[in-house]
Length: 282
Image 1 (tube, one colour):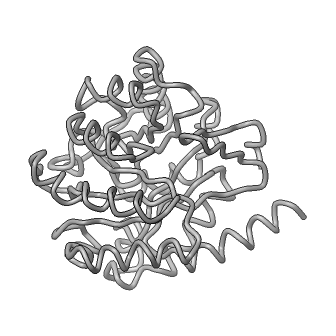
Image 2 (cartoon, rainbow, N blue to C red):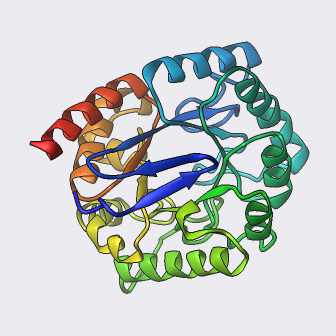
C-alpha cells in the first residue's frame, strides 16, 4: 500500500494506514434515502442498527439526517437535528465508537459536536456553508471533505468536466486550504472524490480507476459507493440487489488506493477488508 506515512486523527484516536483499511458504517435516519430510507427512521430500529454495526466491527458510524440522493430536497436544521441528535447522544452514552455526522450545515455541526460527535462528513467540502470550517476547528473535530459538482437537487443534470481528475483534485485542494485557513488540523482531514455526486456513470468508473492520482493531496481517501446507481445502471438491478457489485467495486477501490470505505453492509465488507489486509502483508 502507498499510504504507510498517512495518519488520520479523530479525537484521541490516531489511525495509521499501514496495511490497514477502515470501515465506516452508514445509518441514515431519514424517510427518503435511496437504499435504507425509512428503515431506521424509528428510534428503536436505529438503536438496533447501531448495535449491529458495532457488532460487525465498523471503525466509525456515519449518521445522516438528510438524504442527498440525486434530486433530493433540503431538510431544515430543526428537522435534521431531530433525526440525528438523539442518535449521537445514544451512541456516546453507551459506546466508545467514533461518530461522524453527514451534514453540510454549520448549525447542525455545532449541535452534534457539542453532543460529542467526532467528525463531520461534509458533501460540499466546506463550500456550502462558510461557517462550517470554523465550527469544526473550534471543536477540534475531524472532517471528511467530499467533492461535488452542483447541489444534490440538480447535480446529475448533465455533469461535464474538461479534466475530471484534475478538477476533483483542485476542488479538494481548495477544500483542504479552507479547512487549514480556519484552523482545522491537516491530520484531521480525509478526502472523498464523491462517487455519484455530479458525475456520469462512466466518470464514476474513471475515478475508481484513477484513484491513485488523488494521493498527491497527502490525505487518506474515503470511498462511498455502496449500492449506488453506478452499479445499478450497469447490472440493471435495484439497490437491494447490489451487494455483489458493491463488494466488487469497493475491492477495486481499495486496490487502487482507498483507505476507508463507507458501506451499508458491514459484515460482508469486514470480511473483504480482512482478506485484503492479509493480501497487502503477503
